[in-house]
Amino acid sequence: MTYDAANIVKPVEVDKEILRRAIQDEYKEVAEHPDKGFHFHTGRTLAGIVGYKEEWLAGVPETAIESFAGTGNPFSVGELQRGEKVVDVGSGGGIDSFIAARLVGPSGAVVGIDMTPAMLEKARAAALESEYDNIEFRQAFMEELPIADGWADVVISNGVLNLTPDKRKVLGEMYRVLRPGGRLQIADILVTREVPEGAKRKIELWTG
View 1 (tube, rainbow, N blue to C red):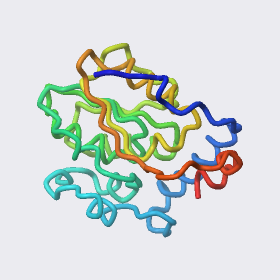
View 2: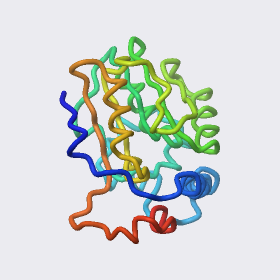
View 3: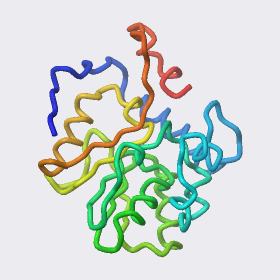
């Protein structure tokens, strides 16, 4: 794979700590009150919209499914293979991590990374209840992945890259943890027009 940092948009000048707290607050609600109703789809409804196969969801704890809040389907980009090591950046309640764990099998491994304590608590509880022992969840920011260089065969991410003001840094981290020839499978939001600089600095627009 190749990675050209020069073609990635420069970091947005926004208060990163305030932004992170706002995002954590938003997704704490999704974790703790998944049926509340949000400005985005969630749960099984969303999984159906973005094309998740029913067999993928078999064996995934319902608590992980109900707090699903991605923007697409990273598994549509390519099939995960038995024995592969996967990093799920922005794993949330864990749905994609659990799907990946099933696809790579007992000889593979999955590490979910998320910064929101409520989501991590939910994902870890689901892992304890599940049949999978090849999955773990770690708390960290996507700009600083707690993964060794070249560990992963595949990095997946679903609806998270849009939430960082420093996409260059995050993509660099994803590239760092991938082995040579590894795969990056991202599902995210695409804009067709340039976002005004003033809008980029409004925290409420990042989460709303």
